[in-house]
Picture 1 (cartoon, rainbow, N blue to C red):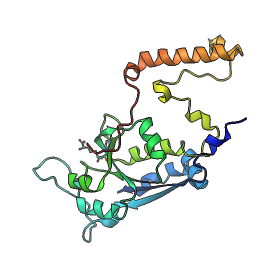
Picture 2: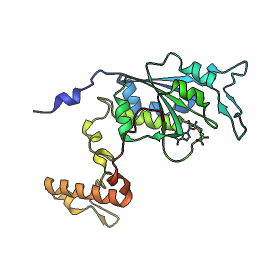
Picture 3: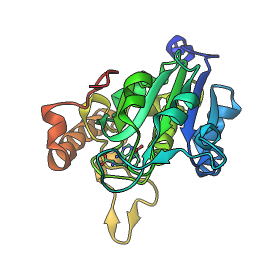
Picture 4: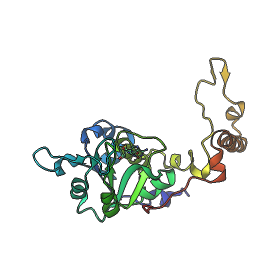
Length: 245
Ligand code: SAH
C-alpha cells in the first residue's frame, strides 16, 4: 500500500506569517514566484506585510533615532516596533539579527509546524534592545555576515518553510532526501546528456542497479560532507531552540 497517511498529515492546515518591515515593496517580486506563490494560492500560506512606517512618531512618522552612548548610525525605536507587533502575542515572534542563533534546516522544520509566525526585519544599526526583550520570542541570524536589513533573511525563511508545507512540492519526498537531512550534504547529481563537453556521467548511475546506485550516493554524500563541511560530521545541524539567550 502507498504511504498515503503521512503525506496527508497536516492537510488543510494554514500557516499565517506577518512580516514587519520598513520596506514592504521589497517583497513584491519574491512572494509571487515559485513555491511561495503556490503555497499562497493553495491556501496553505497566508502572508501579511506590516509597514513599520505606519507606526512611526509624528508628522514624519519617525521610526529611528541615534544610539544612546554615541556611535555610528541609527537604531529602530522600541515604540513603533512595539505598536506594530502589538496584538500578536499568540504568534511566534522572531527578530532577525546577526547576533541571533543560526537559522538551520531544523529551525525551519520547527517553524513550518506552527500556525502563526511574526518576522521582524531590522534596518540601519538594528533595534532597541528593550523591544527584543519584551516582544520577541526568538532571535535568529541568517549567517555570519552583516546584511543591510532583515528582509532577505525573512524571505529565506519564508521560502524555506513554504516548500515544507503539505501539498506545496510536487513530490513530498524531495524534502526528505536533501542536504542537511541526516546531517549530510546532498551527493552530486546529473541529468541528460550522458556526455557533456567530454565529461561522462558516473557509469553507476546508468547501470539500472538500484542497490549499487544507492550505495554510490551514500558514499558520495559522506565524501562531499567530509571534504566541504567536516563540522557537520562532528555535530549535525541543530535546532537551537526557541529561547532568546
Ligand atoms: N549593527 C548590527 C547590524 C545591523 S544590520 C550588528 O552589528 O549586529 C541591520 C539589520 O539587518 C539588522 O537589524 C537585522 O535585522 C538585519 N541583518 C543583518 N545581517 C543579518 C544576518 N546575518 N541575519 C539576520 N538578520 C540580519
